Image 1: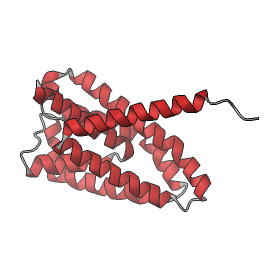
Image 2: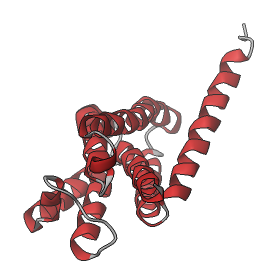
Image 3: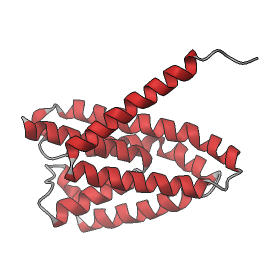
Length: 189
């Protein structure tokens, strides 16, 4: 039972990271699955360990990390990634070792879509505001922070999944409480 919970916690973390960067968690999972025993990908997801797939993920990651740092181009990339990031999250949730046996594959896929899609939606909505406030000068920094958060979230999800899942839940509850507090404030005229 603890292993099943750990697998689901890993899936939550990986899907959340995919909402920030579609290819970074996919590439890390593919490399870890290929070169270690830390994670095992079940069929058909084990194709991610193929050298050609890893190379393609590396190229896609380079492209996403580059265009995401350029004002206006990052907004176009976010529009394109409205499909890519949730799909990446769905694949990561469904592909995680052991989850397929514990959770129906369709449910795992939908859970990943929702998690990554939610994070992607927040990123997509906030990016134009960041561009406006910083006149585009802050985009590269925000993008770099997102990449670092996605990498750390991915690694922690693989190594310390229960702690990572707890941090994600705490963050979501805190964000929800903050938004609720903001809506409750009287509007200034």
